[in-house]
Image (cartoon, protein in one colour):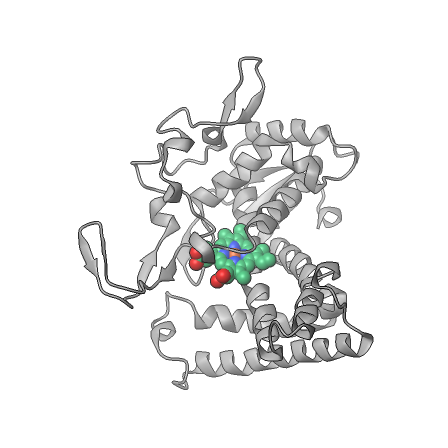
Length: 339
Ligand code: HEM
């Protein structure tokens, strides 16, 4: 991605971010085995997101009703499962790792766990498919929004340049952990544009919530999008402000800290910010995703600055929070472009 962009290019970040998220995930989950199967995964991804696109009435119909979306979903989903079964068979033939902790990727971990009897083969495939989809479009959208937001805040880009300039070479996981502005830039993009706008919970027993009686089994929609824009917890709701996550120390250093305008981060209720959900079923890929977004943003900002070409971001609530049209940025070589 980095080597294909040059000074002055106007880029639509979508494709690059999607390729990046796919490559990262495919390699971490399935090793490089999946490379040849990109098309299968892409087709399945498109039909799975169409099936769960809450903007379409058909997503509320049961899966067995033979709508065109449901049939495509079933067909492509079956193809993907078959592909993963083949990968599993190939790994087995090559001798899977016997210890889940010693595997190089998630498929290896799952295979070793299956050998130990912790899960059966269908559960193994279920897990691989879930990870592939839960972590693909979400991360790509997160990167897209982070770059778009940063493109509108040149001074924050400069601060991140300053942070990443101290690296000896390419960003590493431990190096990006020491960059408060970078971390705040990513977290604030996920506040303003949470890739998952809504998810669901069903109470296991009758409960009272905010004065309403909620019967057991009723589906509740929880929306990070709405809560991240609640004036009780956030000021300048529609403005991208990484500063709200930072503070200056007496010595003049910028560190992670309280919001200066509005309630302090620590005083907000825990779930006033929840782009990754919450409770025991919160996003299992949360740390992975934050790391992935910081690494990508740091790598890009080591080389480039971005300017917004698309100024008004129009969004639609699909299965995820998607841009409704292209998001175009102009690429400028940064002062450190010699790297
Ligand atoms: C910016 C990127 C991401 C966002 C915003 C995001 C957000 C979410 C949200 C909101 C949930 C539902 C949580 C809940 O019900 O409380 C979820 C679940 C999940 N996510 Fe992520 N996610 C991201 C990246 C990833 C990645 C990279 C992976 C895999 C490596 C991943 C794997 C999963 C899985 C497996 C679940 C289901 C967990 C369960 O039901 O126990 N996610 N994610």
